[in-house]
Amino acid sequence: MDRSIVLSLALASLLVGVVSARDWNILNQLKGLGSSSSSQNGIVSSGLSTNLKRYCESWRINVEVYNIRNFDVVPQECVSYVKKYMTSPQYEDDVERAVDEAILYFGSMCCSKSKCDGMDAWIFDIDDTLLSTIPYHMNNGFFGGEKLNSTKFEDWIRKRKAPPVPHMVKLYHDIRERGIKIFLVSSRREYLRSATVDNLIQAGYYGWSNLILRGLEDEHKEVKQYMSEKRTWLMSLGYRVWGVMGSQWSSFAGCPLPKRTFKLPNSIYYVA
Image (cartoon, rainbow, N blue to C red; front, side, top):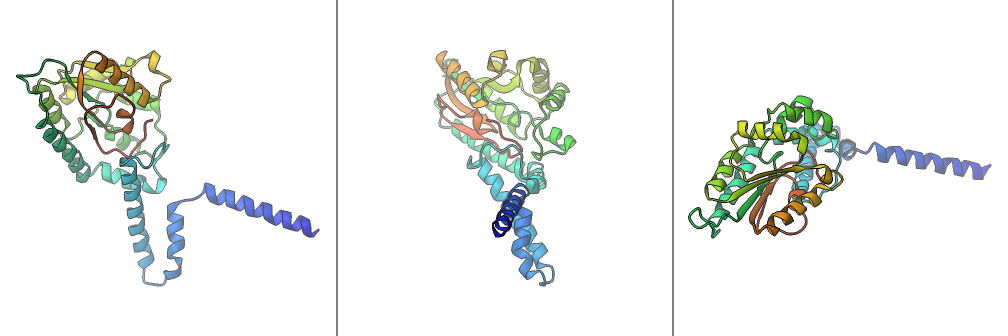
């Protein structure tokens, strides 16, 4: 009898642990930390809000510096925070800072329009690099809180209504006017070419040398492998890739490495 009771208690404890792990949420943890001071005239509520903001900012920063990887969705308690950041002037300022750094980098390059031999290249990704997907997330209310529905997202792409990412049209043409050839390498599928070209032109982008999209032979490749293979192909043709710009680390991963990479902020989703 005693042994049965002990086993029952152990099983119950295990089940509680499983439920607790499944339902873990940073809000619950912070509430627990604040419960002992709940009588201090609402300080717990204020402290919870402050701690949550700091937690979500820390999560976002660690996504950007590539410490947090392979996440499927944004933590539910941080979805509103990510939405607020991605639609804020701070996001636009952060993009502008990346653009400024890229322009400063041009000053150190040996290539100028009068000297270029036609083999200097720059690679841009498209989604959340040249074209913003923020309107899609605004309309669907996700902002990373749910896995991206590829069917719905591609239907949205076909509407050709993505606006340009702030400050990127200027950078794009600054590079093009220096005589550097622009290659657009995207994980969008080949059957979206017409919609993608139309949207890019409407947003103010034109004059690229090649738009590379995923064909059937690329379907089962990870994005980082696909991107790496396209850089390899360009370099095998003799192009000097001076820089790559994207909002996902998979845009830069693998060999061969470009001379410089510029990462734009994006903590809504993760692409491997």
